[in-house]
Image 1: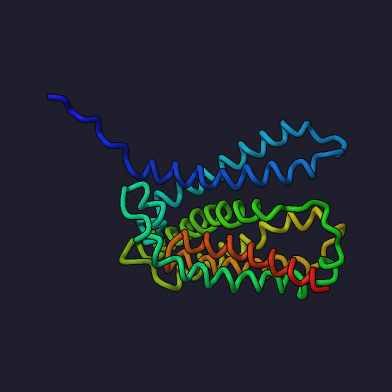
Image 2 (image 1 turned 180 degrees about the horizontal axis):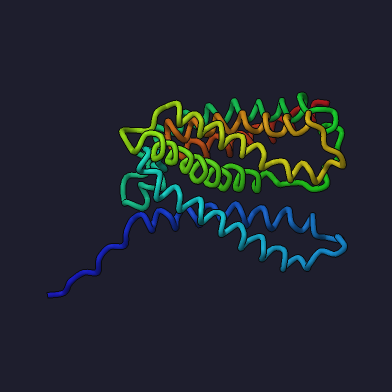
Length: 259
């Protein structure tokens, strides 16, 4: 009698699926932004060396975030229903359905907010700076909408919620809403701070106003995406984040064409 091979742990498929998805954004950023930064810069290694190092670093960070989410997410009720449906052979549309409307609505609002903040509410020190590199829309969608959500929400936010649940609640019941909100805000602040290096490339001098603006403006969106992750699932946060970049990009093009 032939014995069928044991089915691999679906969590491994979930982790692999999330890792590959996150790396798409890393690759998009590496191939679009790094050539602009490295080209003609003195004392910088060859482009292929910098690209390879960036890909390896990105892979390690994405893998760590994916591992945290896959291992700790189910313990604290944080999920990626769509990805889990694929990994566990469940109906994907049924898993994504409850997330689509919240994700689209939040993405539309966030996109208008992103456009307004970037175009009209930036400090003079930021608004008057000529960008030294451009990030194409598809790279913003893939890295911002997918990879950043994997890193900050699936990885960091899940870890923070689990730590509060493990250390403060002694693993009793579901995580308290207050602890989840602390994790949402903390991961949003880290999300905002993560944008400082990109701004630093464009600025010669820093001021407290600029630092607070970069962290605060991006942090607001991080709170929104964290809430979506908590209440609906990772895909809702991804949809909102990705759509925000699309809406902001089109709004900017429309306004520019009218001027």
